[in-house]
Length: 170
Image (tube, rainbow, N blue to C red):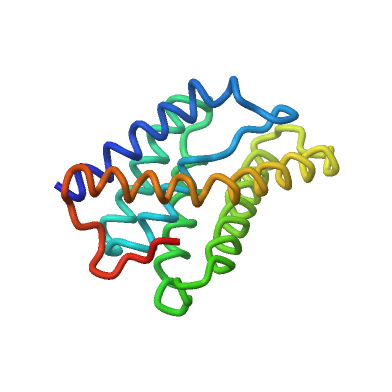
């Protein structure tokens, strides 16, 4: 039941990300709730489940958003992999760890995307414009992360499913 609930939350997160969130933007930038859900699940579930969620989210996002298949799959896969590698080294009781994780994940996502887009021949030369968008999205992601975490905990409680033995309410 736990895995099904995580997959459903990712599915609805991707649908929300690719449809409704485009109407709620600041300077043309929307938060990336898929990254936020993947961070939450990566830090609070087993390696195989979180990696599968990352690939699932990437496939869905690629098919719904981009003409190029594989960019989001690779980006989400790497973000989830890094979160899984570092979760035992992080002090998950401190909010600053989550803030740093969200910012780094957003930077990784955009770094991979820009790198691939560059080699596919897209124009990525307007660095200041791109940097401004990345900074805005990082701030939006950090502000939204704690709300999404509370929502995920609420959903798991409603369905009476244990998310993790000692999950910290951040």
